[in-house]
Amino acid sequence: MTVDITLFLPELFQIAIVLALFLQSVLKPGHAKNGGAWLPLAAAINLVVAGFSLESRGIILWEAYQIDGLSQFFKFAVALGFVIAVLTCLAERKTIRYRPGVRFFRPMTGSRLKTPSAP
Image 1 (cartoon, rainbow, N blue to C red):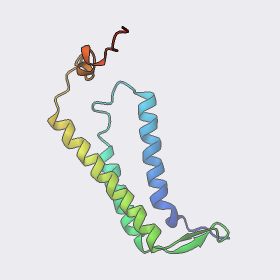
Image 2 (cartoon, rainbow, N blue to C red; image 1 turned 90 degrees about the vertical axis):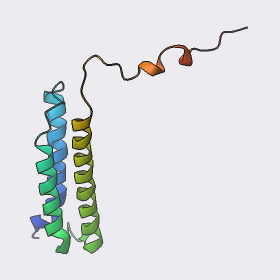
Image 3 (cartoon, rainbow, N blue to C red; image 1 turned 45 degrees about the vertical axis):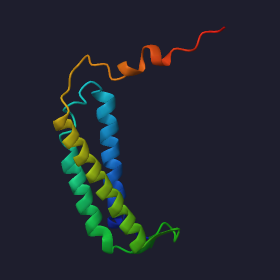
């Protein structure tokens, strides 16, 4: 049985990106502000790999997994959605000024969440 590794490339790149993000969050939890500079490049590479695999077809894993045009299209759609999400986060990061010490849930505290007193 021969396995064509090019059929798995979109999944492998996405798993590698998720694993890298997980390791970054575990190893450097306080550096989330500027720690993802590599992410747009990785998302772009993932989109290119998914685009090149659109024409791939095959049946692998003892004929249990069929790779056709529809599955390849959805892999490309997931990669495109990831690129859009990364670019949206980058645009928001540039427009929102980071201020340490700002309490994001401050409006939720106070009199609005007090329970009514018993009669």
